[in-house]
Image (cartoon, rainbow, N blue to C red; front, side):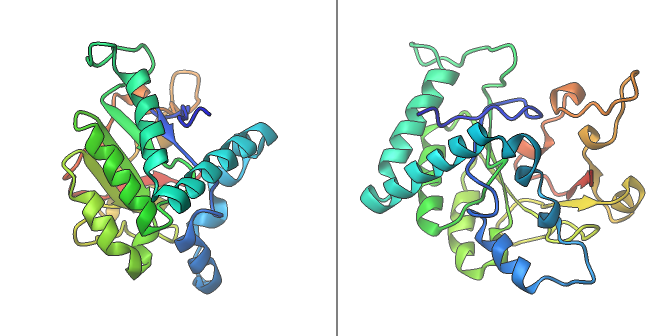
Length: 241
């Protein structure tokens, strides 16, 4: 099974599982959300479009099944071993040197363009994976900070030097969360002006247009890897679309 994904907007490879079904905090907040505000997860990009193709849905579920089976049988070690093997094959040559690839930055890895860090045992598996690759910077966005039971494990993951773990906001036009032990958070805004007024850096891939009038919707188009940079003190805002 190919565990790696290739998110079209990202400069690197990644890993994903089904959205919402494996997003416990989002499920919890959906039950108690403030109806006066726009809940970001109601418009989740990973619950529409390309992600709804039958083959994509099946691939995401197959990966989730593999993970949960591994967590049950061996505390996630078989998942750790298999994804580590696949990252090594994609990112390194036989001598252990980083590959230089045309469309993949082998210094970076995106975790969960779909899905989230759904349990402490799952987070522990990712800690092992990240420890296996100290020369790769891993970016984890998460809403699991909203569940107090998850915070000790999230902080442990975030303490790794090669991990940037960003808490995601719950509502549109809400300031990016600031959580002790985690990096500066992210949010979704309805306008660039409001996001900047609230002190955010606005992701250029969500608003900058090319000569043809279309948004240049990739990190590579703007030579921007800010989401992967550990220690960033400024919240990042993505414009709603």
